[in-house]
Amino acid sequence: MTKKAIFEIQSYIGAIEQNASLYDEKNFDERMDAIDFIGFHIIDQLENLLQNTAQPDELISLRSRAEKVKHKLEEIDTNLFQKLRANIRTGRYKGKEFKNLVNEYVDFNINKHQEEIGYDNLDIFINGLSSLPIIPEQTKDLEPEMVYYQKTPARIVLELVEKCHFTKDDVFFDLGSGLGQVAILVNLLAGIIVKGVEFEPAFCDYAKACAADLNVADVTFINIDARKADYAEGTIFFMFTPFKGGIVQEVLAVLRKESLQRKIKIITYGPCTPEVASQNWLHFASPKNDSIYKLSVFTSL
Ligand SMILES: C[S@@+](CC[C@H](N)C(=O)[O-])C[C@H]1O[C@@H](n2cnc3c(N)ncnc32)[C@H](O)[C@@H]1O
Image 1 (cartoon, rainbow, N blue to C red):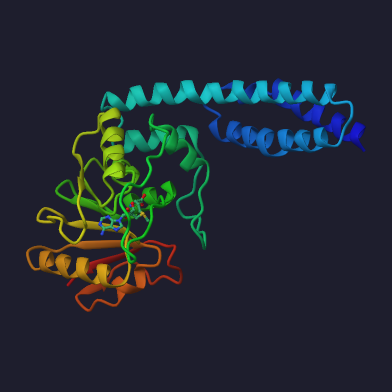
Image 2 (cartoon, rainbow, N blue to C red; image 1 turned 120 degrees about the horizontal axis):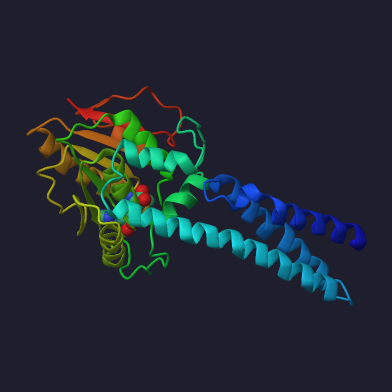
């Protein structure tokens, strides 16, 4: 059994070592799948075999071969992201140019529907554009109705920009902006003014550092409770369920006041959608959804 397993692992590693297309920086998707396969299939299997053998030498050398090829593939991505960040900093990759850039590396379908929040290679790619990989610790306790940080899948942000047809005068707010990815992506994809409102100061600092690192203009992060923020300029408000119950009601009451000055749009994703849908001053503008994990767009009446 072990002999057969070792033979199989040897051929998998050999095939990855020899597959020239994996070393072409453009083939990000294929490389990601190979890195995943080495990590979760080959190395895991070798670890299991190592626990049950008295003669580990061959397995140890195979494991180091697998780690070496994995490292080599990861290095291609490290260099690729360094290059892409430098390109983005020049300011030339905005709107269509940014979307084309992403399309060159990742094959994604914004119309693919998932019943749950699902992350994929597009998220890995977008994460790679941030040079600050260490996620900060939460420093403030959340109130019971506040929701902890979780990222909106990048595919959903691309869908949001595609479907919302922003105008150059729109000002987009991400309520509960977390580490800033939605805000930065919306600015890169649509080129409009974007503001993130975030309760946790460490997240807000991280988001500011990411925006500064990519040299994106017109992206601001404000460290404040969403109930107290100034929305005077806002026309589009996005909520990936940052809070529930009473806090949603309080924030919606603030937004309703804003809607008396100008038409606004509220876009929701996740469990806060039914709470927003129950507001009689909002009109459901997207096709009716059967899932909270589809974007819902509301306009003020
Ligand atoms: C589900 S995460 C969404 C993060 C981000 N919008 C995204 O989609 O990637 C919710 C965020 O809302 C923040 N939050 C919770 N209550 C808040 C409040 N009252 N005011 C501002 N931010 C809040 C949390 O700290 C967390 O970062």
